[in-house]
Image (tube, rainbow, N blue to C red; front, side, top):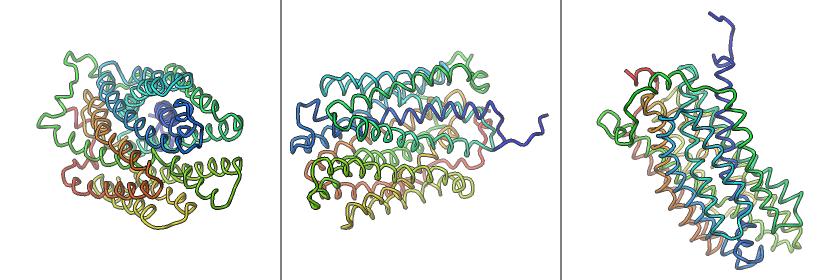
Amino acid sequence: MDGRRRFLDMNGYQWTVLFAAWLGWGFDIFDGLLYALVADKAIPVLLGQAIGSPEAKASVPYWNGIMGSLLLIFWAIGGVLFGRITDKLGRTKTLLLTMLLYSVGTAMCALAPNIWVLLLCRVFVAFGIGGEWAAGAAMVAEVVPEKRRVEAGALLYTSAPLGLLAADAMRFYIVGGLLKDSPETSWRWVFACGLLPAIVAFVIRMFIKEPEKWQEVAGEKKSPTIRELFTPELRRATLGGMAMALVALLTWWSCNTFASVIASQMAGAQAKLQGLDKPATQALVESWKSIALVSFCAGGLIGTLLTVPVAKLMGRRAMFAIYFVLGAASIIGTFAFPWTGATRLYGYFPIGLTVFGVFGSFTYYLPELFPTRLRGTGAGFTYNIGRIIAAAGPFLVGVIAQQGLDAAFRALVIVGCVPLVGLFLLPFIVETKGRSLETLDE
Protein backbone atom coordinates (compact mmCIF):
# COMPACT_ATOMS: atom_id res chain seq x y z
CA MET A 1 0.00 0.00 0.00
CA ASP A 2 1.23 3.48 -0.84
CA GLY A 3 2.02 5.16 2.49
CA ARG A 4 2.91 8.58 1.10
CA ARG A 5 0.98 11.56 2.43
CA ARG A 6 -1.26 13.13 -0.17
CA PHE A 7 -2.97 16.49 -0.16
CA LEU A 8 -6.63 15.88 0.80
CA ASP A 9 -5.87 12.14 0.56
CA MET A 10 -6.14 12.20 -3.25
CA ASN A 11 -3.67 10.68 -5.72
CA GLY A 12 -2.50 12.21 -8.98
CA TYR A 13 -5.25 10.75 -11.12
CA GLN A 14 -8.00 11.89 -8.74
CA TRP A 15 -6.59 15.41 -8.87
CA THR A 16 -6.50 15.17 -12.66
CA VAL A 17 -10.18 14.22 -12.76
CA LEU A 18 -11.05 17.07 -10.41
CA PHE A 19 -9.03 19.49 -12.53
CA ALA A 20 -10.71 18.30 -15.74
CA ALA A 21 -14.18 18.80 -14.26
CA TRP A 22 -13.01 22.12 -12.76
CA LEU A 23 -11.97 23.36 -16.20
CA GLY A 24 -15.21 22.14 -17.74
CA TRP A 25 -17.37 24.01 -15.26
CA GLY A 26 -15.16 27.12 -15.29
CA PHE A 27 -15.36 27.39 -19.06
CA ASP A 28 -19.07 26.63 -18.76
CA ILE A 29 -19.54 29.83 -16.73
CA PHE A 30 -17.01 31.67 -18.92
CA ASP A 31 -19.01 30.99 -22.08
CA GLY A 32 -22.40 31.26 -20.47
CA LEU A 33 -21.91 34.75 -19.07
CA LEU A 34 -19.85 36.40 -21.79
CA TYR A 35 -23.12 37.66 -23.24
CA ALA A 36 -24.22 39.49 -20.08
CA LEU A 37 -20.89 41.34 -20.03
CA VAL A 38 -21.23 42.76 -23.55
CA ALA A 39 -25.03 43.06 -23.75
CA ASP A 40 -24.86 46.86 -23.57
CA LYS A 41 -22.85 46.80 -26.81
CA ALA A 42 -24.29 43.81 -28.68
CA ILE A 43 -28.01 44.50 -28.26
CA PRO A 44 -28.02 48.08 -29.64
CA VAL A 45 -25.86 47.06 -32.62
CA LEU A 46 -28.09 44.11 -33.52
CA LEU A 47 -31.20 46.29 -33.15
CA GLY A 48 -29.74 49.09 -35.26
CA GLN A 49 -29.55 51.53 -32.33
CA ALA A 50 -26.73 53.81 -31.25
CA ILE A 51 -24.79 52.50 -28.25
CA GLY A 52 -25.64 54.60 -25.19
CA SER A 53 -28.68 56.25 -26.78
CA PRO A 54 -31.99 56.58 -24.85
CA GLU A 55 -33.47 53.85 -27.08
CA ALA A 56 -30.56 51.55 -26.31
CA LYS A 57 -30.82 52.17 -22.56
CA ALA A 58 -34.43 51.01 -22.69
CA SER A 59 -33.76 48.06 -24.99
CA VAL A 60 -30.78 46.57 -23.14
CA PRO A 61 -32.56 45.67 -19.85
CA TYR A 62 -35.57 44.30 -21.74
CA TRP A 63 -33.59 42.07 -24.11
CA ASN A 64 -31.15 41.18 -21.35
CA GLY A 65 -34.10 39.82 -19.38
CA ILE A 66 -35.37 37.84 -22.37
CA MET A 67 -31.93 36.39 -23.13
CA GLY A 68 -31.34 35.51 -19.48
CA SER A 69 -34.71 33.80 -19.17
CA LEU A 70 -34.30 31.82 -22.40
CA LEU A 71 -30.82 30.77 -21.34
CA LEU A 72 -32.26 29.36 -18.12
CA ILE A 73 -35.10 27.52 -19.87
CA PHE A 74 -32.88 25.76 -22.38
CA TRP A 75 -30.19 25.29 -19.72
CA ALA A 76 -32.80 23.34 -17.77
CA ILE A 77 -33.77 21.26 -20.80
CA GLY A 78 -30.12 20.54 -21.59
CA GLY A 79 -29.43 19.65 -17.96
CA VAL A 80 -32.25 17.13 -17.81
CA LEU A 81 -31.45 15.66 -21.24
CA PHE A 82 -27.71 15.33 -20.72
CA GLY A 83 -28.22 14.14 -17.15
CA ARG A 84 -29.75 10.99 -18.60
CA ILE A 85 -27.07 10.82 -21.28
CA THR A 86 -24.44 11.03 -18.54
CA ASP A 87 -25.81 7.86 -16.94
CA LYS A 88 -26.24 6.10 -20.28
CA LEU A 89 -23.20 7.20 -22.31
CA GLY A 90 -20.74 7.94 -19.53
CA ARG A 91 -19.38 10.89 -17.53
CA THR A 92 -16.28 11.60 -19.60
CA LYS A 93 -17.94 11.37 -23.02
CA THR A 94 -20.77 13.66 -21.92
CA LEU A 95 -18.31 16.17 -20.49
CA LEU A 96 -16.52 16.33 -23.85
CA LEU A 97 -19.75 16.59 -25.86
CA THR A 98 -21.25 19.37 -23.77
CA MET A 99 -18.03 21.41 -23.75
CA LEU A 100 -17.91 21.25 -27.54
CA LEU A 101 -21.55 22.28 -27.77
CA TYR A 102 -21.35 25.38 -25.60
CA SER A 103 -17.98 26.55 -26.94
CA VAL A 104 -19.00 26.32 -30.60
CA GLY A 105 -22.35 27.95 -29.80
CA THR A 106 -20.62 30.89 -28.10
CA ALA A 107 -18.22 31.37 -31.00
CA MET A 108 -21.19 31.41 -33.40
CA CYS A 109 -22.61 34.39 -31.47
CA ALA A 110 -19.74 36.46 -32.88
CA LEU A 111 -21.23 36.07 -36.37
CA ALA A 112 -24.83 36.94 -35.48
CA PRO A 113 -26.31 39.42 -38.00
CA ASN A 114 -29.36 40.23 -35.86
CA ILE A 115 -30.86 39.70 -32.43
CA TRP A 116 -32.77 36.55 -33.48
CA VAL A 117 -29.68 34.69 -34.66
CA LEU A 118 -27.91 35.67 -31.44
CA LEU A 119 -30.85 34.25 -29.52
CA LEU A 120 -30.65 30.97 -31.48
CA CYS A 121 -26.93 30.66 -30.82
CA ARG A 122 -27.55 31.19 -27.12
CA VAL A 123 -29.96 28.25 -27.16
CA PHE A 124 -27.12 25.96 -28.30
CA VAL A 125 -24.90 27.40 -25.57
CA ALA A 126 -27.58 26.76 -22.97
CA PHE A 127 -27.97 23.10 -23.94
CA GLY A 128 -24.25 22.46 -23.48
CA ILE A 129 -23.95 24.42 -20.24
CA GLY A 130 -26.89 22.62 -18.69
CA GLY A 131 -25.45 19.20 -19.49
CA GLU A 132 -21.87 19.77 -18.39
CA TRP A 133 -22.57 20.25 -14.69
CA ALA A 134 -24.17 16.85 -14.08
CA ALA A 135 -21.36 15.01 -15.89
CA GLY A 136 -18.61 16.81 -13.99
CA ALA A 137 -20.27 16.61 -10.56
CA ALA A 138 -21.06 12.91 -10.91
CA MET A 139 -17.56 12.12 -12.17
CA VAL A 140 -15.85 13.89 -9.27
CA ALA A 141 -18.18 12.38 -6.63
CA GLU A 142 -17.45 8.85 -7.90
CA VAL A 143 -13.67 9.18 -8.25
CA VAL A 144 -12.48 11.07 -5.15
CA PRO A 145 -12.22 9.42 -1.69
CA GLU A 146 -15.50 9.25 0.25
CA LYS A 147 -14.18 11.37 3.12
CA ARG A 148 -13.04 14.12 0.72
CA ARG A 149 -16.18 14.35 -1.41
CA VAL A 150 -17.32 17.61 0.21
CA GLU A 151 -13.95 19.30 -0.23
CA ALA A 152 -13.66 18.09 -3.83
CA GLY A 153 -17.18 19.26 -4.65
CA ALA A 154 -16.53 22.73 -3.25
CA LEU A 155 -13.17 22.96 -5.04
CA LEU A 156 -14.94 21.98 -8.27
CA TYR A 157 -17.31 24.92 -7.93
CA THR A 158 -14.53 27.47 -7.26
CA SER A 159 -14.08 27.48 -11.02
CA ALA A 160 -17.42 29.31 -11.36
CA PRO A 161 -16.38 32.68 -9.87
CA LEU A 162 -12.95 32.34 -11.48
CA GLY A 163 -14.59 31.58 -14.85
CA LEU A 164 -16.74 34.66 -14.48
CA LEU A 165 -13.69 36.76 -13.61
CA ALA A 166 -11.87 35.37 -16.65
CA ALA A 167 -14.82 36.34 -18.84
CA ASP A 168 -14.78 39.87 -17.43
CA ALA A 169 -11.01 40.11 -17.88
CA MET A 170 -11.47 39.13 -21.52
CA ARG A 171 -14.19 41.75 -21.92
CA PHE A 172 -12.13 44.43 -20.19
CA TYR A 173 -9.03 43.66 -22.27
CA ILE A 174 -10.88 43.64 -25.58
CA VAL A 175 -13.78 46.09 -25.11
CA GLY A 176 -12.10 48.43 -22.64
CA GLY A 177 -8.59 48.23 -24.07
CA LEU A 178 -7.59 46.58 -27.32
CA LEU A 179 -10.72 47.62 -29.27
CA LYS A 180 -12.06 50.41 -27.07
CA ASP A 181 -12.46 52.66 -30.11
CA SER A 182 -14.60 50.07 -31.92
CA PRO A 183 -17.51 49.30 -29.55
CA GLU A 184 -19.72 48.25 -32.48
CA THR A 185 -17.47 45.26 -33.25
CA SER A 186 -15.43 44.62 -30.07
CA TRP A 187 -18.18 42.48 -28.52
CA ARG A 188 -17.94 40.04 -31.44
CA TRP A 189 -14.30 39.30 -30.60
CA VAL A 190 -15.29 38.65 -27.00
CA PHE A 191 -17.71 35.96 -28.19
CA ALA A 192 -15.05 34.49 -30.48
CA CYS A 193 -12.95 33.75 -27.38
CA GLY A 194 -15.67 31.32 -26.35
CA LEU A 195 -14.12 28.75 -28.67
CA LEU A 196 -11.26 28.15 -26.20
CA PRO A 197 -13.04 25.36 -24.26
CA ALA A 198 -13.26 23.22 -27.42
CA ILE A 199 -9.47 22.93 -27.41
CA VAL A 200 -9.41 22.07 -23.71
CA ALA A 201 -12.10 19.42 -24.23
CA PHE A 202 -9.91 17.39 -26.56
CA VAL A 203 -6.99 17.55 -24.12
CA ILE A 204 -9.24 16.36 -21.27
CA ARG A 205 -10.39 13.35 -23.29
CA MET A 206 -6.78 12.14 -23.59
CA PHE A 207 -6.27 11.78 -19.83
CA ILE A 208 -9.63 10.90 -18.27
CA LYS A 209 -11.41 7.53 -18.23
CA GLU A 210 -14.87 6.61 -17.01
CA PRO A 211 -15.24 6.17 -13.21
CA GLU A 212 -15.16 2.57 -12.03
CA LYS A 213 -18.42 3.04 -10.12
CA TRP A 214 -20.20 3.95 -13.35
CA GLN A 215 -18.57 1.12 -15.30
CA GLU A 216 -19.90 -1.37 -12.75
CA VAL A 217 -23.51 -0.42 -13.50
CA ALA A 218 -23.12 0.64 -17.14
CA GLY A 219 -23.99 -2.82 -18.45
CA GLU A 220 -27.44 -2.87 -16.87
CA LYS A 221 -30.14 -3.28 -19.47
CA LYS A 222 -32.57 -0.94 -17.74
CA SER A 223 -31.99 2.66 -18.81
CA PRO A 224 -32.28 5.38 -16.17
CA THR A 225 -35.54 7.34 -16.29
CA ILE A 226 -36.77 10.51 -14.65
CA ARG A 227 -39.82 8.61 -13.40
CA GLU A 228 -37.55 6.63 -11.07
CA LEU A 229 -36.63 9.85 -9.27
CA PHE A 230 -40.18 10.03 -7.97
CA THR A 231 -40.45 6.54 -6.55
CA PRO A 232 -41.21 6.40 -2.81
CA GLU A 233 -37.51 5.77 -2.04
CA LEU A 234 -36.25 8.85 -3.88
CA ARG A 235 -39.21 11.25 -4.00
CA ARG A 236 -38.24 13.26 -0.92
CA ALA A 237 -34.61 13.55 -2.03
CA THR A 238 -35.68 14.69 -5.50
CA LEU A 239 -38.20 17.29 -4.34
CA GLY A 240 -35.89 18.59 -1.61
CA GLY A 241 -32.96 18.95 -3.98
CA MET A 242 -35.18 20.72 -6.50
CA ALA A 243 -36.44 23.15 -3.85
CA MET A 244 -32.98 24.16 -2.67
CA ALA A 245 -31.71 24.59 -6.22
CA LEU A 246 -34.76 26.61 -7.25
CA VAL A 247 -34.38 29.10 -4.40
CA ALA A 248 -30.67 29.52 -5.09
CA LEU A 249 -31.10 29.79 -8.86
CA LEU A 250 -33.92 32.33 -8.76
CA THR A 251 -31.91 34.54 -6.42
CA TRP A 252 -28.58 34.25 -8.27
CA TRP A 253 -29.89 34.88 -11.76
CA SER A 254 -32.13 37.76 -10.74
CA CYS A 255 -29.09 39.44 -9.16
CA ASN A 256 -26.27 38.56 -11.53
CA THR A 257 -28.03 39.01 -14.89
CA PHE A 258 -28.29 42.74 -14.24
CA ALA A 259 -25.09 43.38 -12.29
CA SER A 260 -23.25 44.79 -15.32
CA VAL A 261 -26.28 46.75 -16.55
CA ILE A 262 -26.93 48.30 -13.14
CA ALA A 263 -23.25 49.12 -12.68
CA SER A 264 -23.25 50.78 -16.12
CA GLN A 265 -26.31 52.89 -15.33
CA MET A 266 -24.96 53.92 -11.93
CA ALA A 267 -21.68 54.91 -13.56
CA GLY A 268 -23.55 56.88 -16.22
CA ALA A 269 -25.48 58.76 -13.54
CA GLN A 270 -22.26 59.47 -11.64
CA ALA A 271 -20.52 60.68 -14.80
CA LYS A 272 -23.41 63.03 -15.53
CA LEU A 273 -23.15 64.53 -12.04
CA GLN A 274 -19.41 65.08 -12.53
CA GLY A 275 -19.85 66.47 -16.05
CA LEU A 276 -17.49 63.91 -17.60
CA ASP A 277 -17.01 63.75 -21.36
CA LYS A 278 -17.85 60.65 -23.42
CA PRO A 279 -14.43 58.90 -23.23
CA ALA A 280 -14.23 59.50 -19.47
CA THR A 281 -17.79 58.27 -19.03
CA GLN A 282 -17.05 55.10 -20.97
CA ALA A 283 -13.94 54.48 -18.88
CA LEU A 284 -15.94 54.91 -15.68
CA VAL A 285 -18.63 52.53 -16.95
CA GLU A 286 -16.13 49.78 -17.73
CA SER A 287 -14.37 50.31 -14.39
CA TRP A 288 -17.57 50.12 -12.34
CA LYS A 289 -18.73 47.02 -14.20
CA SER A 290 -15.48 45.28 -13.28
CA ILE A 291 -15.65 46.40 -9.65
CA ALA A 292 -19.16 44.97 -9.30
CA LEU A 293 -18.18 41.70 -10.93
CA VAL A 294 -14.89 41.30 -9.04
CA SER A 295 -16.69 41.97 -5.76
CA PHE A 296 -19.38 39.42 -6.61
CA CYS A 297 -16.89 36.77 -7.70
CA ALA A 298 -14.47 37.32 -4.81
CA GLY A 299 -17.35 36.85 -2.42
CA GLY A 300 -18.50 33.79 -4.36
CA LEU A 301 -15.07 32.17 -4.22
CA ILE A 302 -14.77 32.61 -0.47
CA GLY A 303 -18.39 31.62 0.11
CA THR A 304 -17.95 28.43 -1.92
CA LEU A 305 -15.01 27.30 0.20
CA LEU A 306 -16.82 28.18 3.44
CA THR A 307 -19.57 25.67 2.64
CA VAL A 308 -17.06 22.91 3.43
CA PRO A 309 -16.58 23.50 7.18
CA VAL A 310 -20.21 24.54 7.66
CA ALA A 311 -21.62 21.48 5.86
CA LYS A 312 -19.23 19.02 7.51
CA LEU A 313 -19.63 20.39 11.05
CA MET A 314 -23.28 21.47 11.08
CA GLY A 315 -24.86 19.47 8.27
CA ARG A 316 -26.38 20.36 4.91
CA ARG A 317 -29.70 21.64 6.27
CA ALA A 318 -28.05 24.11 8.66
CA MET A 319 -25.67 25.21 5.91
CA PHE A 320 -28.56 26.12 3.59
CA ALA A 321 -30.30 27.99 6.42
CA ILE A 322 -27.24 30.14 7.15
CA TYR A 323 -26.64 31.00 3.50
CA PHE A 324 -30.30 31.81 2.83
CA VAL A 325 -30.62 34.17 5.81
CA LEU A 326 -27.38 35.99 5.08
CA GLY A 327 -28.18 36.08 1.34
CA ALA A 328 -31.48 37.85 1.97
CA ALA A 329 -29.79 40.31 4.34
CA SER A 330 -27.02 41.12 1.83
CA ILE A 331 -29.38 41.82 -1.09
CA ILE A 332 -31.87 43.87 0.90
CA GLY A 333 -29.07 45.71 2.68
CA THR A 334 -27.43 46.66 -0.63
CA PHE A 335 -30.48 47.84 -2.54
CA ALA A 336 -33.07 48.97 0.04
CA PHE A 337 -31.06 51.87 1.43
CA PRO A 338 -29.95 55.14 -0.26
CA TRP A 339 -26.27 54.29 -0.60
CA THR A 340 -24.05 55.95 -3.18
CA GLY A 341 -23.41 54.10 -6.43
CA ALA A 342 -19.83 53.31 -5.38
CA THR A 343 -21.03 51.81 -2.09
CA ARG A 344 -23.57 49.60 -3.85
CA LEU A 345 -20.79 48.22 -6.05
CA TYR A 346 -19.03 46.77 -3.02
CA GLY A 347 -22.35 45.43 -1.75
CA TYR A 348 -21.90 42.76 -4.39
CA PHE A 349 -19.21 41.18 -2.20
CA PRO A 350 -21.56 39.97 0.59
CA ILE A 351 -24.12 39.08 -2.10
CA GLY A 352 -21.49 36.93 -3.79
CA LEU A 353 -20.39 35.45 -0.46
CA THR A 354 -23.87 34.07 0.15
CA VAL A 355 -25.96 34.02 -3.04
CA PHE A 356 -23.02 32.79 -5.15
CA GLY A 357 -21.24 30.84 -2.41
CA VAL A 358 -24.17 28.52 -1.64
CA PHE A 359 -23.76 26.90 -5.05
CA GLY A 360 -20.53 25.34 -3.87
CA SER A 361 -22.68 22.88 -1.91
CA PHE A 362 -24.73 21.54 -4.82
CA THR A 363 -21.73 19.84 -6.42
CA TYR A 364 -21.51 17.48 -3.44
CA TYR A 365 -25.04 17.58 -1.99
CA LEU A 366 -27.04 16.58 -5.06
CA PRO A 367 -24.80 13.59 -6.05
CA GLU A 368 -25.20 12.37 -2.45
CA LEU A 369 -28.95 11.96 -2.97
CA PHE A 370 -28.96 9.33 -5.74
CA PRO A 371 -27.51 5.86 -6.49
CA THR A 372 -24.81 5.50 -9.14
CA ARG A 373 -27.07 4.41 -12.00
CA LEU A 374 -29.28 7.50 -11.43
CA ARG A 375 -26.68 9.97 -10.21
CA GLY A 376 -26.33 11.95 -13.43
CA THR A 377 -30.06 11.84 -14.10
CA GLY A 378 -30.96 12.86 -10.54
CA ALA A 379 -28.34 15.57 -10.09
CA GLY A 380 -28.98 16.98 -13.56
CA PHE A 381 -32.73 17.03 -13.04
CA THR A 382 -32.83 18.51 -9.54
CA TYR A 383 -30.16 21.12 -10.25
CA ASN A 384 -31.58 22.28 -13.57
CA ILE A 385 -35.34 21.79 -13.74
CA GLY A 386 -35.90 24.73 -11.39
CA ARG A 387 -34.33 27.02 -13.99
CA ILE A 388 -37.60 26.97 -15.93
CA ILE A 389 -39.31 28.66 -12.99
CA ALA A 390 -36.24 30.77 -12.18
CA ALA A 391 -36.35 32.09 -15.76
CA ALA A 392 -39.18 34.38 -14.72
CA GLY A 393 -36.78 36.28 -12.45
CA PRO A 394 -34.47 37.86 -15.06
CA PHE A 395 -37.42 38.62 -17.34
CA LEU A 396 -39.45 40.41 -14.66
CA VAL A 397 -36.45 42.32 -13.32
CA GLY A 398 -35.58 43.30 -16.91
CA VAL A 399 -39.08 44.63 -17.58
CA ILE A 400 -39.05 46.62 -14.34
CA ALA A 401 -35.49 47.87 -14.93
CA GLN A 402 -36.71 49.65 -18.08
CA GLN A 403 -38.29 52.20 -15.74
CA GLY A 404 -34.91 53.26 -14.37
CA LEU A 405 -32.45 52.54 -11.58
CA ASP A 406 -34.82 53.14 -8.68
CA ALA A 407 -37.29 50.64 -10.11
CA ALA A 408 -34.48 48.09 -10.58
CA PHE A 409 -33.40 48.56 -6.95
CA ARG A 410 -36.97 47.97 -5.73
CA ALA A 411 -37.19 44.80 -7.83
CA LEU A 412 -33.96 43.48 -6.34
CA VAL A 413 -35.20 44.13 -2.81
CA ILE A 414 -38.14 41.84 -3.63
CA VAL A 415 -35.65 39.27 -4.96
CA GLY A 416 -33.93 39.47 -1.59
CA CYS A 417 -37.02 37.94 0.02
CA VAL A 418 -36.74 34.75 -2.07
CA PRO A 419 -34.08 33.08 0.14
CA LEU A 420 -36.36 33.63 3.15
CA VAL A 421 -38.99 31.50 1.43
CA GLY A 422 -36.37 28.75 1.21
CA LEU A 423 -36.20 28.61 5.00
CA PHE A 424 -39.72 27.16 5.13
CA LEU A 425 -38.66 24.33 2.81
CA LEU A 426 -35.66 23.19 4.86
CA PRO A 427 -37.55 20.69 7.07
CA PHE A 428 -38.43 18.68 3.97
CA ILE A 429 -34.92 18.13 2.57
CA VAL A 430 -32.84 15.00 3.10
CA GLU A 431 -29.85 15.46 5.42
CA THR A 432 -26.82 13.70 3.89
CA LYS A 433 -24.11 14.46 6.44
CA GLY A 434 -22.00 11.33 6.87
CA ARG A 435 -23.70 9.45 4.05
CA SER A 436 -21.58 7.07 1.92
CA LEU A 437 -22.30 6.73 -1.81
CA GLU A 438 -21.93 2.95 -1.50
CA THR A 439 -24.95 2.72 0.78
CA LEU A 440 -27.14 4.17 -2.01
CA ASP A 441 -26.25 1.28 -4.32
CA GLU A 442 -27.11 -1.49 -1.87
